[in-house]
Amino acid sequence: MRIILYTGKGGVGKTSISAATAIHCADLGYRTIVVSTDPAHSLGDSFDRRIGPEPIALGPNLWAQEIDLLHQMERHWGKVQQYLAALFSWRGMDGLVAEETSVLPGMEELASLLQIAYLAESGLYDVVIVDMAPTGATLQLLAFPEMAAWYVEKIFPVERKAMKVARPLMKAVTDMPLPEDELFDAITELVYDLRRLERLVTNPDISSVRLVLNPEKMVIKEARRAFTYLNLYNLSTDAIISNRHIPAAVTDPYFRSWKEIQSQYSEVVEQSFSPLPIFQVPLFDREVVGEEMLRRMARATFQDKDPTTIFYRGKPQQVVKDGDDYLLVLPLPLVDKSEVSLHRGVYDELIVRIGNWKRHISLPQTLIGRQIAGARYRESTLEIRFKSRSNGNQG
Image (cartoon, rainbow, N blue to C red; front, side, top):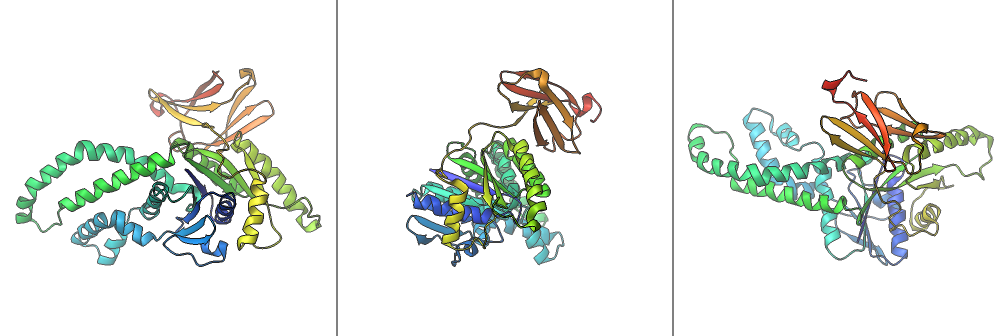
């Protein structure tokens, strides 16, 4: 079983890459389904076929689905949303505004992700390919289930029993909406559904995230930030897809400057994501729409490689807590520690230089503003220590 999640900044071509990968996997004989969790569904446009909220067969071994966000929200968040909306309305909020406010940021996308667990566990498919919402920000929400499960297991039973005792008394003195048992049941079910999903997407033997980008400054910067958080939340990234490179065969002078710029940013991509493999995809001479063009894109991307391969194992970077400090840990085998130098970039960026090799790292929010207290190289890893804010001045 393989789950491959494609994400990236809006407009970089991740939907086309997702569809092309699905066609290639199906051609190789894998029972493959490609699903879109992006609210702005465009999967059907890529295949030039109508795709709905239920899986639809597109060809031998190939299915597609554009997940119905409203249905998923009702299924996984409906009871909670109803209670929150009633509570907000009781506080005087307009009914429509209360209903909209009761949907927490990211919950629509997160609810749609729960469909992935169902598809993966159904036994109907060998490969599930996911066209994610832009930047993969939704995946950060998967860090919550562990904390939420502790709350449900330790605190929730006490609150539930207390409410059962207090509910008759409170109803006598207030008209405030009170949580009923079915609300507690819905929250418990949601938390365990999320934990099930979390176990799937954080299992590196099953799931891989692939970042899609273009060789452009702003796109690369956002991809670096997403990559940092994917590592932070224990999600395995196994490849970078660098899309829309102007082919060398294009010699028109109009594109000369663009080719030079792309060449420069290709080096930045290498510096930012090494040692991950980087697949370069050309800018095609026509729109990538329909199966013929998607197959062409798949061949150009993967060539003779099987897309279900786990192209990289391990964590290219990791943040761990050490007392009051944090360590940024980078695997760097066969390095002479005298060659290592660190440089603080603009605001949230750290630049690690080893001889002629350079790595740009977007720091997570936890490390921004912390002073670098030193670094050491041991057991083929570089450990960079960030001091607790109370132990030193901000750097």
